[in-house]
Length: 532
Image 1 (tube, one colour):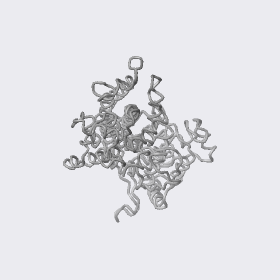
Image 2 (image 1 turned 90 degrees about the horizontal axis):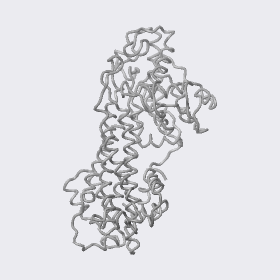
Image 3 (image 1 turned 135 degrees about the vertical axis):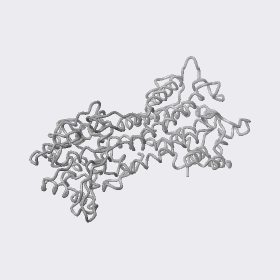
Image 4 (image 1 turned 45 degrees about the vertical axis):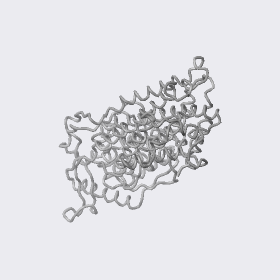
């Protein structure tokens, strides 16, 4: 079971790639192809570049150097060397390599960008990139080295370098890194031999930023529902009230995300047997006199809702960015030009600047972090006997002899604290590069990498809350009182990987096991038969 349905082949056309489809490409189970319409645009754009070279015109990046060297005219017999030198010199990244999953996403976005028809790459170059993707020949791409303008130059240069048969490459067939040239040969793939403009066509753009932000978005979109499940379980464990989730309250302040979160929480708490929709745990305290719970329970739709709405904004940015031409210069074939330019036109601009996805990544991190920030407070309430409405201290019998969830709470507190530092926005920074030609940059690469780490920390924090809530509910089960059908399904899924906490044992394996259920969408999947 996975977060998204799988296709066998995905057609790329430069206009319709969704974040969800891109994320599904990470595993290598889906092949890609290029539509005929996209190939026609690529051929048309390449024709413009070829005419410029034939006519010996002076055009930036095609017959000139780059950046500060844009005023240096390059002879035609050196144009291929110019592009090769560009890739080699710009392959200056450092740090850990991208995982094969992230490299697949990076390559897929770059293919989609070229398929849009404004890059000027040759059709055969594009098809070689598709071959590399479909055969799992994935270049070694280090994470660090991009400032997010002129695009993600260093990582994209490493991506191109491997497809040129140079440097290291991951071979999905063996699961190992090796010499790129040998791996390509083993799959019958001829390395890319760059021609005029093609080096730039492969490296100008925001695709590393978009890769990490897309992954962060897709995993965070799953977490919105996981967080609502977690609060419903904690509410049951703490014998809280459902009143705060009444639809009339949320209709009076009609933020879309707030209403959606409240609705989901109501659904997770609803029992289909009781005429009032109350679980056996809820029935037991129906007339207990408590009318209000702490904010971490009562205000969860307001906090979870803002993350829901923030992700809607982030998805909109990604939908545009994944299907945008981010090259410089940009090639416009005759079909994109008026009568004044019947043979097409080359225009220089700044679409490579990463400000849009950088800001989206920072926004995503800040918004999603709050799911863990409020979750940690609920874990504290369940562990603290002065707040837990009768649950034993640290959710364990024979406290003192056993420490129970004492340090599990410390772990989620540590993750939340770490996220507070990671949520400082990287995109408010800039640094001048390339002899002041590139005097404002987005720092989007780091913003996106941080966002992905924040999301992972939130996944682990919510896994700890769900594990703790299952333990809290376990005490009610021992008294013969069940929770709702949806939450009992979650409890059963957790119990398949983590047994009840009767006495102390190493907790990390349990946390990791539940984290995998959270990350892979299983926690959400098991509730689907019981919610509308």
